[in-house]
Length: 298
Image 1 (cartoon, rainbow, N blue to C red):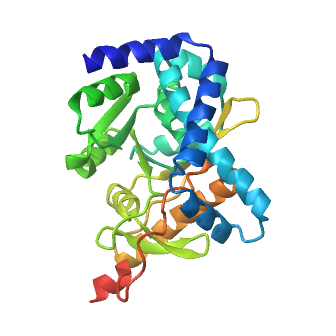
Image 2: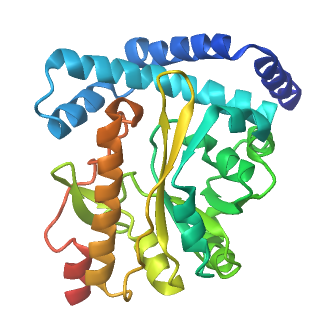
C-alpha cells in the first residue's frame, strides 16, 4: 500500500509545473529552517566562523536561502527524475566537459570529486544525459519499500549504484573499466575513519578514501560541481584534472585530501548559500596523535 501511495505521489509531482514544485520546495525549506529549525544554530555558527566579514544580516539571508534551496532541491530531484534525462538536458549548462574527456582518455577511469553544492542530486542524471557511465555509493534505507521507490526514481541508463558493503572494491572495478566514480568528501567523519585537514581555517575530519583510491588505481581526479543559476537553471562546472598521489603513504594521502578539500572550499565560496551549512562538518574534534601521518608514525 505504501509503495502505491508513494508512486502515485511521484507521478503527481511529475505532472505539476516546475514553478509549483519550486513554490512547494520553498515552503518545505521554510518549515525546516524556521519552524523545525533543523540545526539552524549550527548553520549560523559555521557560516559566521567561515566568513567572519559577513554582517549578521548577510548571514541570515544566506542561511534562509540555504534552507529554501534544500527544499527546492528535493522537489526538483523528483520532478526531473520522473520527467527523464531529456528534461535536465534542457536546464543544464555545461562548462569544461573537455577536462573529463581528457582524463578519461588516459584509460584509468575517472574519480569525480564533488560536494553538496547546488542540486547535487541531479549529477547522476546530468552525467547520464551526456553518455558518461557513473558509479556512485549510496546507503540503503531501512524501509525496503521506500528504498525500492527511491532506487527506481534515481535509476537512469549509464548509472550504477554501489552498496556501501563492498564499495571500495566495486569502485576499483569500475575504474578498471575506464568508467567514472563519483565521490563526496565534504561530510564529517569519525576520528577512526578520517584525517584532519584545514577547511575554512579550522581542522575538519575528512575521509582519505578518495586519495587512497586515486593512488591505488592511478585514476585522475576531476572536480565537478553543480551551481544553481539565478534563472532557475544550472551550470555543471568540470574543473581541470588532478594527478593521483604518487603513493599511498600517509603523507601523500594527507596532502591530496587537503587539496581536494581546498577545492571544495573554493567552490563553496562561489555560492555559499548553496552549500549545506546545517551539516555539522566540524563535529569531530581533533585529539592528540589523531592525524593520519601521526597515527602511521606511531
